Image (tube, rainbow, N blue to C red):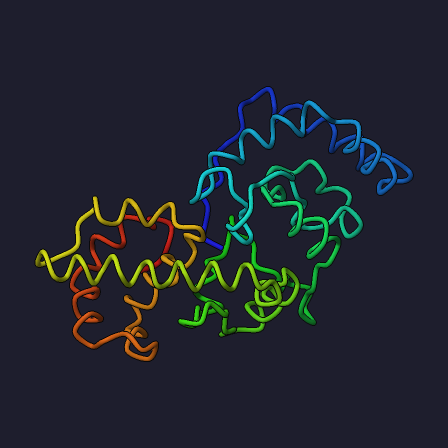
Length: 243
């Protein structure tokens, strides 16, 4: 789950969302009105999806798992919890059918203060809350990380774990080859890593470089030092991250 930068909507779409929100808020049955309005807003959903598609770190892919194509406009805060956010641009996430319809559905865990425990890719950096083991499994670092892993089934879906494992190995191979050929890795080497089956593996690798965690993940100390020396170049791939 790589941080995304939410772009401003074109004025005509923003105005339409504002009008629909006003009708929901004014309704005597806001949840019913929200669901009916969302179901019937085919054109608006299509426009929202088009806006979301180009915002992903891996273009057109699910902002939650990065494994599958983004097909659905998901409500981060479900309609059942807050109908007024049904047409709020900040509440829309591009998701695959599995993450939206089978894993997350209307789950929305919160802490005792009511703060979300599910990570929002347009607000949070998942690498602050979980780390990727060399096996492809995520290990939680915070309660938010744990809940996100559980709600989205990020460790329960074997195809995700396998893809992350292979992607992790792919990142290691790219750095090993670069270390044999040049003093520092360059942007051309890193460009190919953007399109690994799960680019999130490279995202977590970058955070491991910045926090000096690579040596704890069976990465040779020499390669870890090479990656650390190349950190300025690595940072350029994830400008939204605090590396």
